[in-house]
Image (cartoon, rainbow, N blue to C red):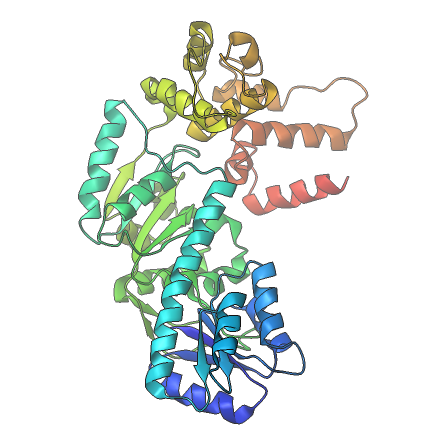
Length: 453
């Protein structure tokens, strides 16, 4: 089933296409012109747009232009009254996935829709890859330690089943990389890998984000929206920081995992899905379950196959190859020759305890490469900002709460404390909040207030 938006200023044409496509199991939305269609595309998710070319308020060509300008990964099929060579060439030249000729032949409609949906899948994958590059995410699973070899073996073993996996470990250890290794090694590898950061979604929107919503189900729900659970159908849904999921939403997640079906917010229809669930957390879910802060039945369901990723300080033999990887990534050229890091600098990296783990190492090397303009080797002088031993917990807290110099006002003190907490946790707000003994909501409120000062 696909979400399809039909755009035509003739209600009769919209109705004909709606009847044809609904009979094939697709969900249909309608728009009377290009402007209305563009507003729907901004507020909801669609797999395909079928649009007339000639309309008064933003025609089909203008709509296609706006879709491209706003980087909306949605293919468009044009409707035309006649199939001259010139009109077909023009439509395809503009970037349309296909065209339909009035009056419609049901077989032609089905073929065009299937072809366009295949193109849409490619568009979505290209967007995902571009976002990966933009975010600087390196999906290489590089290690030499026996501890990580064991993790790799477990990941490949569980990939052969559809068992729910719970990946635990500190922030920055590479839990998402392990999740992608499981996905890519499984029979679902050619399908979507959809990642959701549970800590980044406001409590009121969690269920709408995961399960989608129907039009009018709440203020601002101007159209039906597909949730991540449904979008990942056939592939893998990765729930990062699952321990941050609101308690009230956990029951619905448990039911969706157990029964492989769910209801959209504001909807009554049961939607079946074939989605594999992989979760990750830096918290102790078993302790949270015992303290009634996390549903015990959900914990048991998620922890069918647990995998623990050890922190970088417990597998220091991985620091050298990871450093080389990040040097190559952030250098001006990939054709590096000679020594990339001096022995003294390598020793300093090994002596540091890396509280932010692999993410912090990557950030440190990127910072060095920016300051050195890509030149090598990296020396101990380049690593002066790394304070050996300062990452130990008791020392961190001493640094955070030391009395500031005379003359710094209260707001400045709070800013310094918050910034130090973020630095020590590789900018992970949840970890920084726990370090300061604050709830994540209180920490975010404090952070917002300080940004306005």
